[in-house]
Image (cartoon, rainbow, N blue to C red):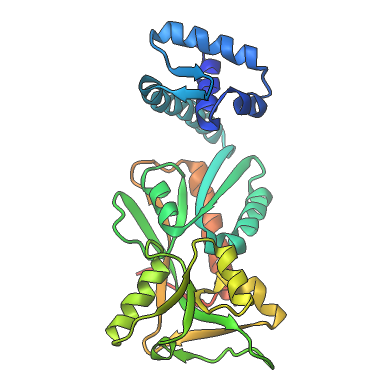
Amino acid sequence: MKLIQLRYFCSIVENGGFISASRELYVAQPALSRQMVELEAEVGVELLARGPSGTQVTEAGRRFYGHAKSILEQIQFAKQDTNNAAGKLVGDITVALPVGISGMLAASIILEVERRYPEIKVTILDSLGYEAGQMIETGKVDFGILPNVGRLQDVNLDPVLREDLFLFSRCQGGEPDYSDIRLVELAGRALVMPNRQVHVRRALEEAMIEKGHAPTIRYEQQSLLTIRSMVLAGIGATVLNWPSMADLLPGGDIDARRIIDPNLSRNISLATSRLRPQTPVAAAVYEVVRNVLVSEVQNGNWKGEIITPE
């Protein structure tokens, strides 16, 4: 069995077929097919079912994929560890960021890693917070940043900051309103919010229920871009963290009011999986990410306060 066969097989599975895998690998489809025929002959079972509707992964293929992926990752780790032993940090790192944070941090993280460790390549996976949590928990990424964590297990948390949540709405004329707003004043306001899987929605509802009210969710949208556009159009207000809307504020079209009485806030933590040991390369990038996050707060770009380690 050849390593190249494992790489080709994993690419076919991850790309959903031979055509897309061929493009990603820059390998002709006949060459891919030949390698897969040889691989299946050696394994002794059908891994990929080819048909008019495309390529389907068999049950045996799904199981084999898990083993093949693990083998390729272990080889990558071995290469990195060898370079690390020689005093050179080299390798690929994947970091999970919630979509409401990645717009502010992703470019800064990549630029700082390039400056300090030019032979480390960082891939940012941005998604909803609970999806980022799942990727971290299962060890699919090296580490990530998470808002308040719910029921995640096998995750180590390193709280970095306590961030405020804000009511963002279309400015009704004149100067934008940056004054604080009491939580009870949100009662009856038409809101555009993500669904209850997203922490900020649950935090808002729980806080308002304690005050004897319930938020008025006029529209439920999962896309941050859609929520932002609806707020800009004046369709409704939203409750989010500062990074989610920060780039829109200089235009003067959005009110940004910190929610108080009680303060609506949450912890932001760096998170690693107990199922995925941290390599020296991951540890180096981890510190870069922490420093970038802290710098954004200190520079006033992220509204919150740094959590001092006990």
